[in-house]
Image 1 (spheres, rainbow, N blue to C red):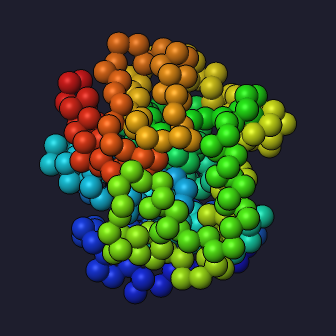
Image 2 (image 1 turned 120 degrees about the horizontal axis):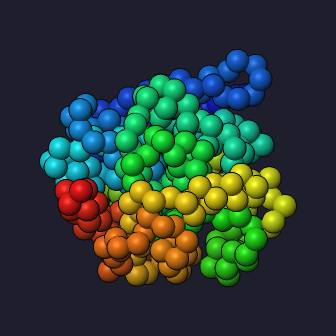
Image 3 (image 1 turned 60 degrees about the vertical axis):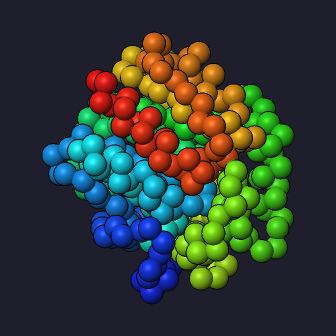
Amino acid sequence: MKALRTSDDRFVALPDFPFAPHYADVPAGDGDGTNLRVHYLDEGPRDGRVVLLMHGEPSWSFLYRKMIPTLVDAGLRCIAPDLVGFGRSDKPAERTDYTYARHVEWMRALLFDTLDLTEVTLVCQDWGGLIGLRLVGENPDRFARVVAANTFLPTGDTPPGKAFLNWQSFSQTVEDFDVGFIVNMGCATDLPAAVVAAYSAPFPDDSYKAGARQFPMLVPTAPDDPAAEDNRNAWKVLRAWEKPFLTAFSDQDAVTRGGDRAFQRDVPGCAGQPHTIIEGGGHFLQEDQGEQLARVVRDWLKAM
């Protein structure tokens, strides 16, 4: 497996992003003993309750910069990894290097084999949920609670919806896969130029974008998708999940709208929780209303 590594000079002087990088090697899973370097943020007291902040497509841990200060000030330890293919993590060069199962395994190796995280509160959005909720399903004893925000765990047994199919088609046909532009379009607010540039920073040219291009095609949209059965198995765990589970979706995300109701209906741990809708938030609600989402998480944890 050939992997690209974005130069550090691409990440200099990013706006409101003073966080130190941390790195760990995980097995690439190619059968040749190759390792991939994965980047993550680790902020807050080492003995604080762990909040795992998982980003999705096509963002990176920069997405959580507005939330981390509020959570750290509350004494929480924030771990925010960059998925393989994104941010400061290594980027396998071929689209065929990326599979749903590999994404789950890469994160499992980082979070559990290397960091040995336990009693985790998962905060997940977009693919952060598709991967994070799989980790919950496969490693339930590692997690104490979940906050789901603009995400879902598809099995391909129901149609994905027109908004997602439109995005999937766009992602495969647009000539210039401009990551900063895409994130900006997924927000309810117009982002400053420096923030747009920060989302594009991990991708100096198209050769670095194999993972971002491939992600939309890895979402299970048919019952025989390679990841469908594993997701069904994860749902079996979620349907028996009695630990606290909170939904905090936004009011302006066409792709995941209504997904919160599915969690509330099917996950026992949702019962009696203070579910909320974040007003003024698009798909990337951490950008539009990051401070508000952070307060929701902080206050929820403080009440426990």
